[in-house]
Image 1 (tube, rainbow, N blue to C red):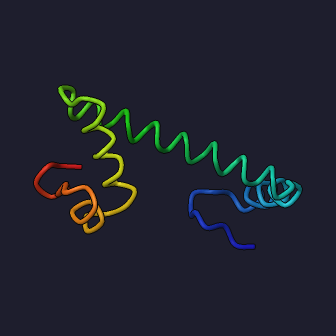
Image 2 (image 1 turned 180 degrees about the vertical axis):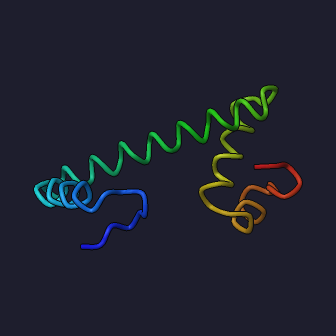
Length: 86
């Protein structure tokens, strides 16, 4: 299998793939959940640094805009990420 990243050594990629293939479906799901939670925490930290005066609700709306996109945010939450910021 060819590495999806150009900065990953092919031997390291082979080890990574072998380790992932050994995981059970439940372990893969747990790993995915941890990676997603980490990415969300980093996004939240960036938003809190960018918008330090925002309350939790506005931070959650900004996170939702990143996750769901502008159209859904405008229709469901009456929140326009283009004018409110992401």
